[in-house]
Image (tube, rainbow, N blue to C red):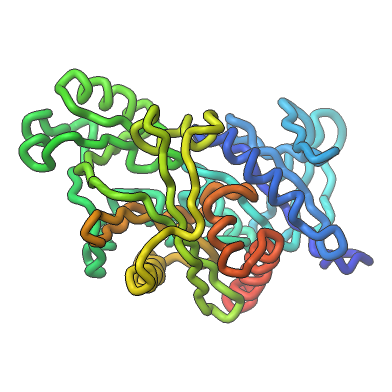
Length: 358
């Protein structure tokens, strides 16, 4: 808390350099609405596609996205001190930032980079820290760690620009169809379903537009089930009930368009219709996976469930889609934690972690 105010100043970072820039704006708008004005002073910071941090405003329920203006920079070791640099005029020091709340999906925001910056600046961070963020966003690294922890995952082959297996080699190893996805993207950005060699060539071209490392995964015939994990200020883990994503047949799988563009792209069933013992087992595995990747703060854990009730962990998202109608929010709400309380708990957890480490 700074100056004469008893409110916490929360810097909400949104936008960013990744392909999920627009999704971040939707998520951050909901965070801004959920921050209790009686407890917090929200400081929205727009991260441009070039990576500049610009002070902005939240007016009538909308976040402004300036192309230029006052840039800000956290001071290393400053414990929340920050410098503002106007487009014209003299730089000045901002009122101290108490907590940084990144709502940045994908690379340069969800991958440990911003989390590391807050560590260097010694300012509390809401959400997952460096290690868990970096491990979870890299699907290749995540799968290796999950396998090591004995958690079932789909078979996969890592592809780089300099070491790409042939279509026939992948078909032999994984069967058909195959899913090709960037190793370090989210929101289904750059994901392709491959049935033929022509599909494969196109998938590589699309995937390498977003990352230098891709993952080829076997197709799992099953339901897409997700749950949320939320850490409290005493390091206790709360794991939510599960929810199910049912993509529209027109999309085939849960694509970017199905998630964010097409209003009828998918249905969310919350809670998921599962035998209680299966759901309980999945929630236990979600907590185990969260810890195996070194996560803290929060994450959404995604599974595939087959017709014989066998389940495999698909991936972990440490800054999941975070609107009030996103799956994370819905499964938390059905479990008794409404959206504003999730935000409050993330702030409290970030302050508690900083108190332990700083």
